[in-house]
Image 1 (cartoon, rainbow, N blue to C red):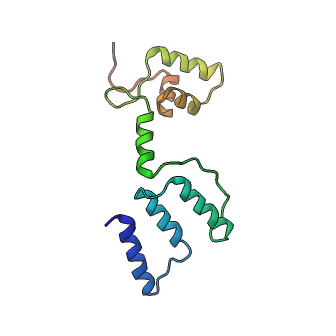
Image 2: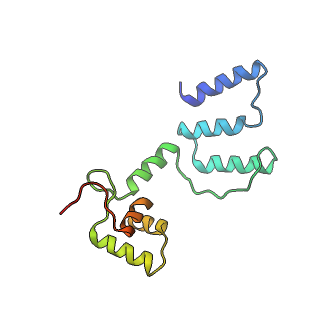
Image 3: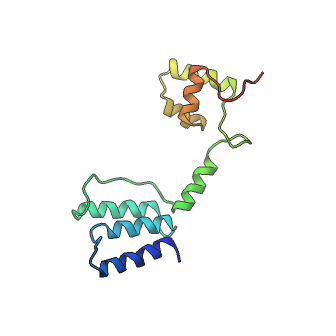
Length: 138
């Protein structure tokens, strides 16, 4: 039995005993279905937007671009990042010089540069500062 099915059964049992989660029940079940791989992120966002239109949820309507289930999205995310053989993102010396120039002269943000080079923002920050992680290389 998957997590969503087990939780749904426990929720029905608790509702029978008088403890209701009627306002958030649909949202909880949708999230569990998303994590179980039954629906996409777009479906979850659409449900949340419907709940806001119906007055159950407070907030603003969101546009979505998550056409994946949770597991498919994680798989796509992991395969889309450039990584070295050790599994860690790296910048070579030429990239570090280019990053510094783009940050200082062109006014690019750390997040824009991280996305462009496929590394974490902290890696860009270290490159800008001229620091290096790990043992010194010669």
